[in-house]
Amino acid sequence: MRIGIGYDVHRLVEGRALVLGGVTVPYHLGLDGHSDADVLVHAIMDALLGAAGAGDIGMHFPDTDPRYRGISSLLLLRHVTEHLDKLGWSVGNVDAVIVAQAPKLARYREQMQQNLAREMRVAPDQVGIKATTTEGLGFTGRGEGVAAQAVALIRGSV
Ligand code: MG
Image (cartoon, rainbow, N blue to C red; front, side, top):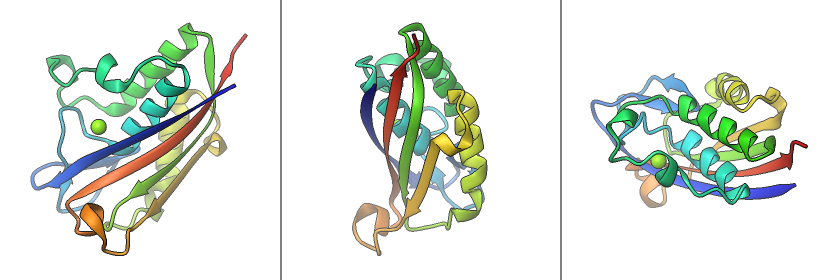
C-alpha cells in the first residue's frame, strides 16, 4: 500500500461556474482556471499520482495544452485512475477537505462522493469529503478563493 497527499487552490471570479467534485454548485462566483478548475478533483488527482510516485497533474495535463481548456476534471480523474491501473495500482480510499467560506456545500456532498467514486472505480464509502470554513481568516475566509486538500491510499492490484 502507498499513501499520497494533494493540495490545490483556485481563485473565485465572476463569470465562471463553481464546479466541485463534478457538481455545479449554484453561486455568483466560480473558480478560475484552464480546465473547469475543480479544485477538489485536482487535489485528489495529485494525491493519487503522488502515492504512485507518478508525477503530478501539471505534468500529465499541462495548462498550456488546448485539449484541456474547459475540460471536466472528472474526465481527468478517469485518466489518472486508468494510468494508475496500468502501473498496477487501484484506489484504496481517498479523504479530502474543501476549504471555502461560502457557499454551504453539505447538500452536494453525496453527489460529489458518487461522481468521484465512479471515476475511481470504488464504492462511495471509500471517498470521504468534508467542507470547512476558516472562520473568515485568510484568502479562503475572505472569499478570494477555494482550497482543497486530499490524501489517498492506493493498493497494488496484483
Ligand atoms: Mg488546479
